[in-house]
Image (cartoon, rainbow, N blue to C red):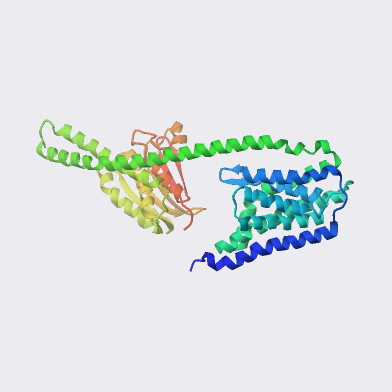
Length: 452
């Protein structure tokens, strides 16, 4: 049974109460140990600066990727831990986070929990690494350790409610969160330590690390522009898929009528003067029918719906494709043969995978001269099952190879859709497709699929 919210309501309530309570206790310990020790007057400016910095960071989170944001509020909190007296720093940082959360519309429980997380981290950091007026190497090291411990505790505590609410393993969520945020977290910690030390040793140089902010702003604008472009591109691709689907369906019915009428005319005009013209029309209608089928296949391959996976025997799949193309190959005198080097099965969408192999075979049959042989081989490669389709046709021009699998790259033998469909299907299955060709000696297309 899936976990419900009520299942975790009590543990979540305990966390919302427990973490801030632990933070208060640690802040009291920090105050008792470190007290209000005398500091340079300028350090009291950290209090309003911390509040303003956290509120701004909450309102304007920084993007470090199209779908990933980082909150710079950790930076003023680290400065509060290192530069303010231990009796003041934790309370300043926690209150700043509470105000920042409420200013951005977060609920009271969430705001209190985040403030409690900050209180725990800053209280411990202020016990380890507060900076005095005269700094030595030992204090530098302790300040560095305190800053990095703060960001580690912040991530560790922030993941706890999510683990309780979702029922997912805490360590798994922590690993995912750490892997996604560690570059930004380490950078913020290092920047906080640098600014704190410079503020004591060389106050005029303290703001220098913040020179990266304009660059971060420009990076954010670029990421936002890229995200907008990606959204527009996704819309265009979705419209293209709809267009392909609509066209193929709308044209299918009248085309079927045309083909039926042409068949009647061909029988009626057999041996007559117009028989050749009718035969040409039938051939063109058949070509259009194949084109529509490939348009439908391309639209289906482009859809984001989950693959209908099942265990597919590749030997059976290739044998089925050979049976389907035997008649077509016979009309041009081309032979088809399958070879199974090692029995292989994959977890795949059988219909889509068959479509990919069928397109390769169709191309191979059309480019092969009369009397040639097209070979389908099933084997196991170094990375997984392999399907190879080899022909003895004229080969592929070298200048076409870089764009060979792009859609609508026409050749003398087709519409330029078959290879594009094959590549899209294989990529959706997590595999790769490649070609080895030699002018005058034919081509071999190889599909390599992940083990299934």
